[in-house]
Length: 102
Image (cartoon, rainbow, N blue to C red; front, side, top):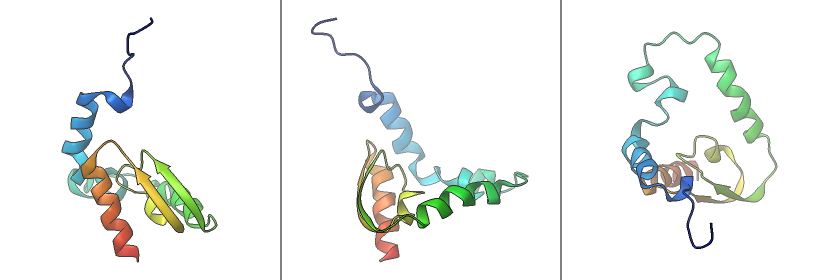
């Protein structure tokens, strides 16, 4: 409808607040830490290693990582990386990981 803005993920305040709140624990699922440390996840290590290894093998490039989140995969890119995200807390984690790699 003309003049009416449709809802979108990037503008949804509830979603923003969710990621701001969960930023510190967001990667616990992938890493098997925090509340997920005791979960039995047969084959998970190999499963998550596949995308990580894929990203690590990508050539050096200038990359715009839209919705970079916590940088779980972004941190494995090589070259100049610009990460964008709605959540400042998530982008801060990505930045810290990026600095740690340098």
